[in-house]
Length: 239
Image (cartoon, rainbow, N blue to C red; front, side):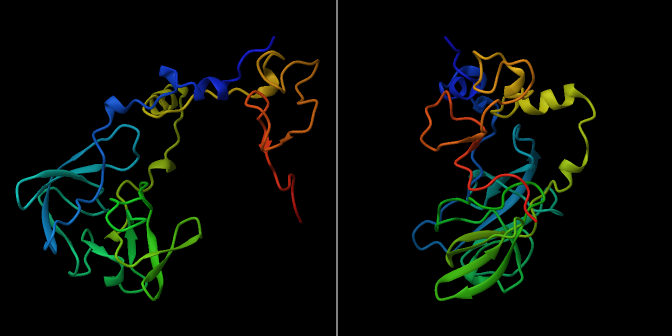
């Protein structure tokens, strides 16, 4: 009788497979506008490290004294003030609706629907470009070269997410990689299925390290068999 493979055990929700949310500093979202409120001014108090997040997080204080968390752009300092408004100057760090931004503006932490707090372009060093406008929609060009049309009232922060170049530095040691993974809901190191025993993985066992079967798997395969290239349209190299 075979064992449950790793993907099945992760889905069960054991402690080692869960995200260490007790280390997280909090949700980084835009503060929603209240009724008859057109502008929110805030000041950067300090920058804090958020484990599991590549970009730094800024602890901010609004004009009414409430505190919050903000995803800062490159080039800002502690003590600087910015605005979140429905209309305002086009300056790095300001949070404005996409309809107010001219074509070619760099923007990040973009909302998917108005007032959802920010969903797209949030990783360190990432930004999107305002590419086109049509009706009540704005087209954005992302780093992946993909484009997306979103509502013109969605908020975005002008600039580039801080912490760019983080992935350029190599880990050098397995210990550094282990500490990095500890703050994420990941299992590391990753072991190949062909190196496992036959009871542990569909590709395990045999005299040589080979899957001994096709690696393309049906979308409807049961959990213990759903490994490899799932519902692949094609495999291999193309000319």
